[in-house]
Figure (cartoon, rainbow, N blue to C red):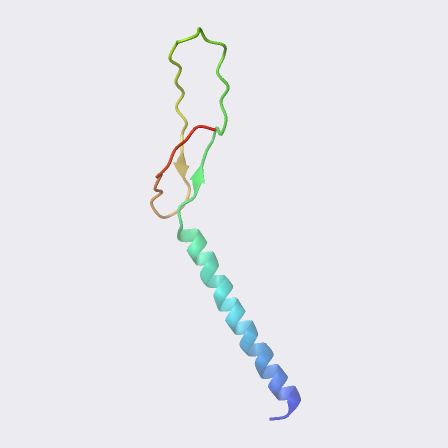
Length: 75
């Protein structure tokens, strides 16, 4: 093989490798869970000291796999 053929072969090999790798990554991302929060922040109105206040946040899974919520904490 001459140098031009060798370079062309190496380029084609690298191109095929990176094309398949990026395609696999895209497919993996499409199949993974994706948390979506329509409302990511809420401000309470002033309340009397000692009063209980609650607010429910909605979490939607826009991915194809089940979404596991393992840890929840306040900000």
